Length: 113
Length: 115
Image 1 (cartoon, rainbow over the protein chains, first blue to last red):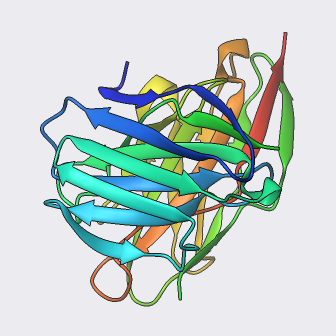
Image 2: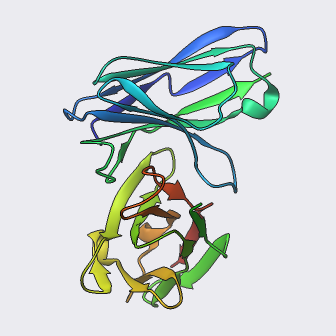
Image 3: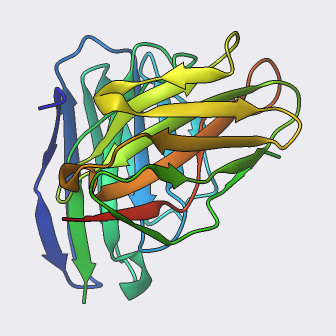
């Protein structure tokens, strides 16, 4: 185990649903990340939080809404998603944003119907 | 802008043979370079990194990578492949001292090691 836990592991939702993805890290890190992984495409960075402050939003549509209540927890709130949003969503953490050895969770496999 | 290219979607190699997974990058200034590996149903795991110093970097599980500044490459290598090395490999880059601080990842190369 990497010390980064993501729940749920699988999620199926309709386009009108609202759901949330959760990420928790037990490593004492201060930076947390959301990535989108689609087949045969580069890993897409979505959001970065450093010491609970959002430092990067990589032009992500507003139907994805992140929340970082503390340095150990990161959420991704989802609403009115599109089928093309189906992907593996990965959470990662690192000691600081500048420290680029990131530790990844196993991901949430999201299917939007 | 920074970018990474992994020109091969898949690399096939027989167990015991040497393997190479290719990566080229583009970044302003000096690069930080990384390799990560992803096993089925798992997140990415750090393998090795280059920041400065020796161009040949050694990492986990017997992997190594060679930084070539003139060719802007950072190919991953292993002298003798194992079946258990079969996985998805990602190269990543960020600028050492300028520009975007976050990592930029390649699209991944699937390594298949046949027994």
